[in-house]
Image 1 (cartoon, each protein chain N blue to C red):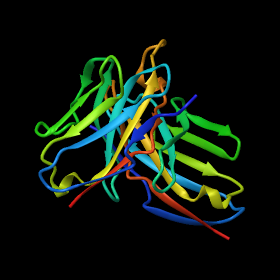
Image 2 (cartoon, chains in turn red, blue):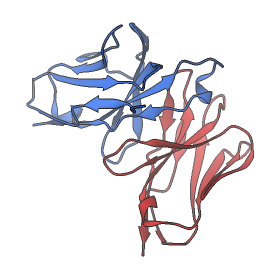
Image 3 (cartoon, rainbow over the protein chains, first blue to last red):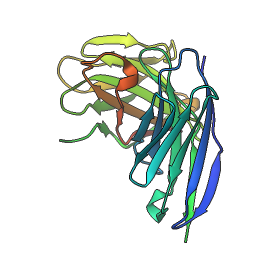
Length: 109
Length: 119
């Protein structure tokens, strides 16, 4: 089966850097996804990691360590619009994603 | 290119009524997934469909819930005899036809969801 642990809530200041951690257990690792979800809106794809290391994409970077079952999402130069939930997910079988409960990030001025 | 369209955005039903949720995937996408999100919980997989076929319904309750994706028209998630516990946000997602194989390589495009409230 699958299990994902993420912090429930985080608060950070505008312009700062924040790291959102995700630890996972899954049988047969096949990559890890991060999605962003603003309140009442659709989750949107941020990143996909299948190899160890850091992948940078603008202000957002995602890191993966398969040996540790660990990933993090790094958000730089935080903006107010980054206030959202960040969902960590792993494939569960061939046809679906298993999502964590998400980390609700609040960016304050 | 319009995104995944779901309607209605909000649906209110009384206990015992039927709820019908509709989802039109992105143009060119033939894979549709339904997820349910309860307050303070993660998205939970319900069912995966391709045109006219249910591929995986392992996450769908055995009773009262059904899904279809006809040759023409949107995918429908149908909940019969709704109960209060069915109140949740229901999200549909689509992905393009896989040319490379492997779900893990396909990102999901989600709709904005239908918030179902059962009174």
